[in-house]
Image (cartoon, rainbow, N blue to C red; front, side):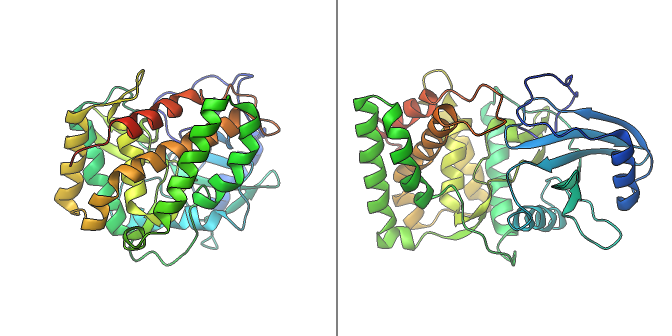
Length: 330
């Protein structure tokens, strides 16, 4: 679920995880953060991993997040990465600090954070212009994160896929099981190659879908929802974007004009290295596999308190089959 939306929807029973925050608790938090007096507190519908509120004070508009699954140990990487990127001029939510300088807070006994609310809305029907803007900003984000001092792996990377595939296999048909196992074996082979070892790494967003980017018209106003970020191959971030921003959603067919716009804009900031060009197609398959596995996991093995209807797993099965059958020509 996005942390920044244009208009707050009503609180309703479909919120996946929901920790009730009282106005008095929100006011106390605002005082700790020196952000003025509470004007409104409105729950955001639809979060799967976190509980989110729009928090408006006399000093501005913010988003309050209570983390339902991530721990105090895991969260500093994400929050300080956002703080680092914001300080480098990348438009991301900027975590607000309390009087002691801490940006990881505690509310209702749970880890929490308050970030500034981004302007605009998600562009769910992107044009090549939108794709180009995302590509250039992603390259800027990768470069800006090079000197980020904290380390945390992509927690939904290859080892998680290997652990999770056996859990979802009993829930799929024979053809799907074969594809999952074959693709996992292929990705394990790719990851053992010298070309893969040569891929440049750094902090990646790892989940930069259409609904995690904000626009005002054709102007990009922010990347958000960094809670799957980790240190991994930059090419994986590119692949995740191409698999979402540059496809026809109903069929998963690749849209060449969108993809070309994205890649050209990205490379205008950071040209791809030879190893990246050689492994783009395997990485596109990796990005599709990752989200097929996670959606199967969410669908068939829902976690406690997850009341939302999970995403359709077959979407990324279609994406994977398209990437296998129709490799991109660079």
